[in-house]
Length: 194
Ligand SMILES: Nc1ncnc2c1ncn2[C@@H]1O[C@H](COP(=O)(O)OP(=O)(O)O)[C@@H](O)[C@H]1O
Ligand SMILES: [Mg+2]
Image 1 (tube, rainbow, N blue to C red):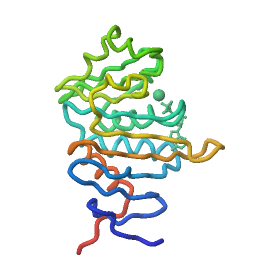
Image 2 (cartoon, helix red, strand yellow):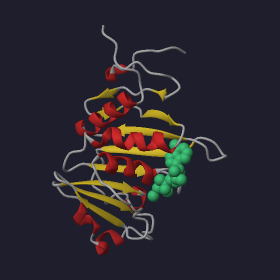
Image 3 (spheres, rainbow, N blue to C red):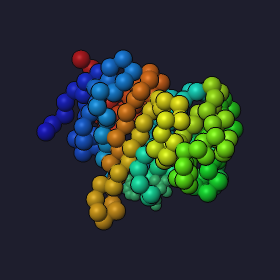
C-alpha cells in the first residue's frame, strides 16, 4: 500500500504511522483515526500535537488498561504547554490541577472510583467548567456522568511483549476535530499541492 489521500483530512498518509485514516464529517469521526505508537516518545508526541488546539471548555477522555500510556500522553500536552518539573500521575490524588495562563487544566483519573455515586461526593464534577480543560483517565468508571467528550482517545498494547501501543482517536465536536487534524499532521507527511 502506498501513500493515499485520507478523506477530508487531506493528508498523505505514511502507512507505517497511520494504520487507518479517518474521515471526518460535521465534527464527528465516522471511524477512529488509528495510529501506531512505536515508543513512549511517540505517545508524548500525540499530547504535544494537540496542546495548541486545546480550548477552554474541552473534555478529552483517555481509555486503556493500566500502563497503556494515558498519563504519558497527558504529560506530552502539559510539557508542550510549558509545564516544567515533575508531572505526577493523578492515580492516587484523583486530580492534578495546572493553572496555565489561559486555561485551568485538570488531569483526572477515575481508576479508584468503586462506584459512580462517588461522582457526587468527590466534588470532581466541579472541574468540568467553561473555563477549564479536563483530561480524563478511566472515563468508563463514570459513564453517564461525564459531560460529552470533545476528543476520545483509546490506547491499547500493540503486542504481548509490551512494546508499542495503538491509539484510536475520535472527534465528537469541531474542537475535537481540530485535535484530530493536528495529530494526523504530526504523524503524516506534509500535504502536497493539488
Ligand atoms: N507507545 C509506547 N510504547 C511503549 N511504551 C510506552 C508507550 N507509551 C507509553 N509507554 C510506557 O508505558 C508505561 C506506562 O505509561 P503510563 O502513561 O503511566 O500509563 P497509564 O497512565 O495508561 O497507566 C510508561 O513506562 C511509558 O513510558
Ligand atoms: Mg495513568
